Picture (tube, helix red, strand yellow):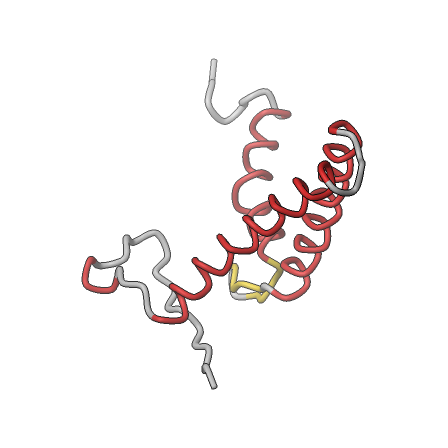
Length: 118
């Protein structure tokens, strides 16, 4: 049985060269995700060739499936992945919003009052 460990939090410091290695589980995830991508590509080809669907319908179906799959994945990440930000445990998207987007929005909407003085 594979035991998952929580990765160390490096912050903004780069990971040391000695620790930039892929373990067996990392290689499995890398290659299996490539395999799933190729499987999806083959399934789309099968829909065009054998299923009798046209190229446009298959392209639309692929776009819908990608959109729905991305939404499900985003919701899972939002629900499950929490980080420590300013002493609180919050969802990773909220941390990004509060640390990156919100300060930029305040400076943009505020007319850059903090950057110019007369």
